Image (tube, rainbow, N blue to C red):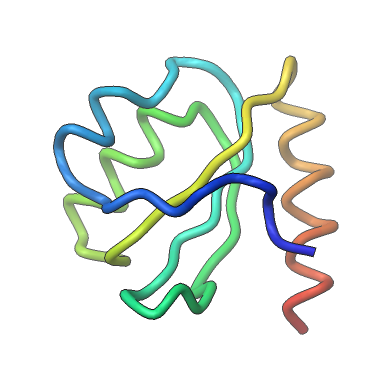
Length: 81
């Protein structure tokens, strides 16, 4: 099951609006196909993804801890395999 959040364009404005908190995120292409699932401090992670041109779109969900974001990312990766 994908994250229950809308896709956003991966650009500077989106990265600036991302919370400086732990979370799980999905990177996608223009058609909404999930390319990667990862976790970490959202703003930092999205800055890196933007800098490397890893995707066109992103969606995320915040978590209270990095451990919870790691667990959620693992669950989502399993669904993609």
